[in-house]
Amino acid sequence: MSPRMVRRLTIPSPAALARMTAAGALLLFFFTAVAIVVAGTEQRPLAERDARFIAERLVEVDQKVRTRLVRLGPPGTVARTRRGTREAVAQLDSLGRSLDGAGGPAAARLRTAIAAEVRFLDAVGSVLVNPGSPLLAQLERLDVAARAALARSGGPQPRRKGGVTALQRLWRERAAAQT
Image (cartoon, rainbow, N blue to C red; front, side, top):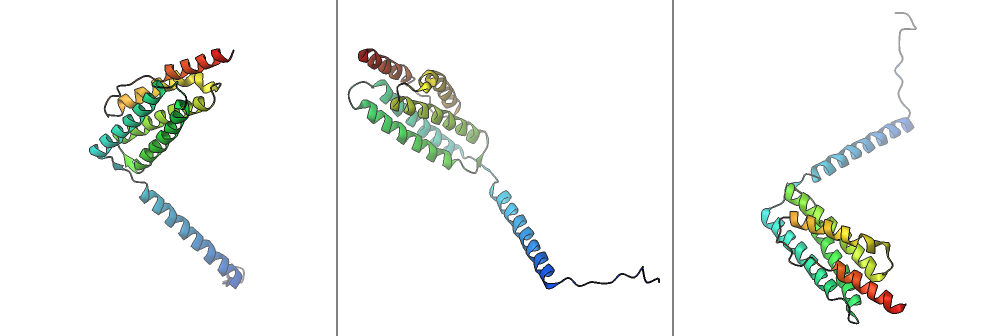
């Protein structure tokens, strides 16, 4: 063998060994974390009774807010309705968290219904705080979307559909009284 063909075995320095060990440990940590996340994100089907319970609470929250909206007018009702709307959004957030890790068509319908209802209630809350809010013009569209999503959620059908017109009428009357 010629001297050029003989390769010398070089031993890495202690610093290089430390860097390789640290890189290996980081790679091991990364792949372990990925495996844990993937294993933890498996969705289980939502039980029928759980879906029914969540849908019933969703309709109940919607109906309470709509009842308050229809009764707007006398002094103090706007502040109570605003508080009730904030509480309703908090309840919906809690219902949404209860769907974490749940899969299947019922869970998907409920997530959609909760999201639509939260968008509607956020807009209602904004308009209650600021009658000049640009969301006032979007309330009817958000109301229709929320009611449609509620109808598809699989829960009881809401009885009260009103509220938006009462809120719009109240702000128009108050604006006319100020001029």
